[in-house]
Every structure is written in structure tokens, then in C-alpha cells.
Picture 1 (cartoon, rainbow, N blue to C red):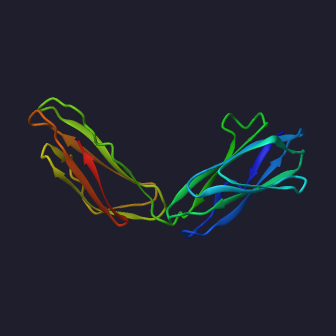
Picture 2: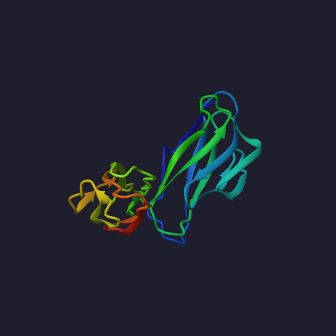
Picture 3: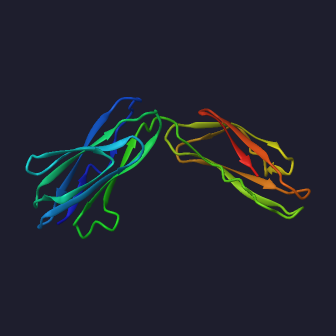
Length: 220
């Protein structure tokens, strides 16, 4: 058996909070032997599996993010199964996920056969790395950690301000020239330095302002 999923990706467009949108993926057996579908999985906030329509016209209502078929659904050569994917967000935000099917196709790989799921991609998406824990350092020794703002969506995001408040042993090295506009996929990396002047615990707060909101992170 040879399993194939169409389309190659599902884009749900813009879906408001509280609404549900449905799209269909077709699983086709392009091989010469019977294809057995054992598991359907979706990942990503708000995504779930709806109805699964078998090759004989039977419909199984799943209504969950994962479902195992026992016994497996059998797809004869040249036949198809339709898998309904639902998206019902509780908040309007940029979301990605995957639809994964596990079959007896020997060429599908250990992680199954999958396609990407997308929704609300016109909503700004900002990913922030906030791992700014320096731990114990010797007095006078300089340490540096990166702080990264990433535009994980497709809408431009302006970074208008970055500031450190607290111990003067922390600093931005160097302080970035702002404002900066991040297009889809672009990142802004700022180096945060720490040079302890005395023994003891130091703390600070890094704050940022962007066109999609503000945030802060503890620096220790």
C-alpha cells in the first residue's frame, strides 16, 4: 500500500473565537495492496478530528484530537477515506499544527504521514525567549546571554522599546537602535550582559514594548 494525503496543507484562514470551521483531508491508497489506517492525530490549539468517512460510505464521528481505529480502517487500492479537521479557537491567535495518520504503508516513516495545519495567520505572532538566568558568576567576570524576539507570523511587528531595570550589574551589550520592524520570520537578538561587582544575588527586569503589546522577563 502507498498512502497519500491531499491537500498538502490545510489553511483555515481567519476564524473568530467561538466559531468552528471545517476542512477535509483525503487519504488515498495509491498502492496495490490494502491500506490500513490505525490512528489519526491532530496537534495545535483548537484543532480536532471530526467525521471520518470510510470507503464504504460509513461515517465515524471522532470529535477528539486523537483516535485509534480497532480494527484499522481498510482502504482498498485506488480508494479513499475523507478525514474532517475542525478548528474552534477560544482566542484569536496565530496557530499551527499537524494532521498525522498512522498506516501500514512501509514508506511513511516512524512518525506517520503528516500535513501542516494553519489558522489565523494574519494575526501577529511574537515569540519571546526569556531564559535569562545567569546563575553564580565570579566577581568581575563578564557573562552574556541572548534575548530574542521572533516574528513567527506574517504580519509586521514593530519593536519600539527595550529597557533593563534593577541591578546595574546587568546591561544591554550593546543597546539596540530602536524602533525596529520585524517582518515575518525575522528576529531581533539583544545581548544581555552581567558583570557582578560584589558577591551576592543580583536581579533585574527586562521590559519590551512592541506594536502587538508589552512584556517583561526576570533577569537573575
